[in-house]
Image 1 (cartoon, rainbow, N blue to C red):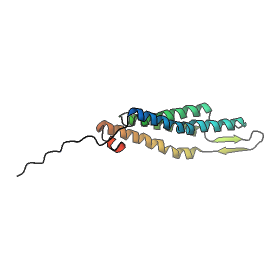
Image 2: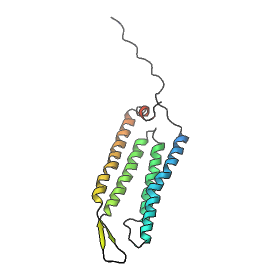
Image 3: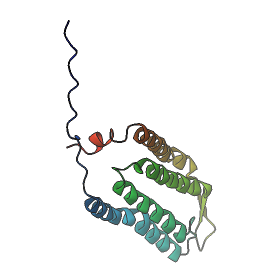
Image 4: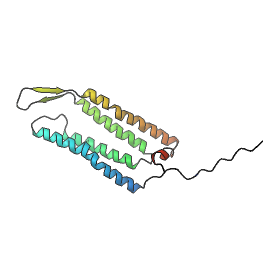
Amino acid sequence: MSAPAPVPPKGPPSYRIQSLGYRILVAALRMIPSFFVLVTLPVAALTFVNSRGIAIPISTFSVTAWGIALVALGAARYVLRPTRAFGPVSIAASTVGLLYLLYAISLSPYRLTVPSGTASIVAGYSMFLELVIIVPALGIAVGALVTLEDATAPTERLAFDFPA
């Protein structure tokens, strides 16, 4: 009868995490187009429409506040990706996105009245946003699963997210 084979020693980790400075730099660079898409363009469009005498359905302050929150949480997610805080920050980012969509649904339907006329157009967009809510809802579920995985096996995810 032969003896069981010895367990091979564990080698070095099979992942390579970028430095914190690099992650901060990339997060800052990713914030530029995100800020442009989530804050600058919507605020410019709403300001343009409002300057033409058409009532806007949402305030520019709300769009700015929600957009900045989403951009900041997106950058934090990128920086914290190799840490245990990635799951909770992902849940927070998806929750803010979900709340923003719920706030937008509360403003539906929108009634567009032509400034110098009697005609009006009603646009109901709540069903579309209800479908879009699936995305942040899945993000919350994924964040919860990542949090659970990081609690049970702290470095298991790193080999897939940061291959060597």
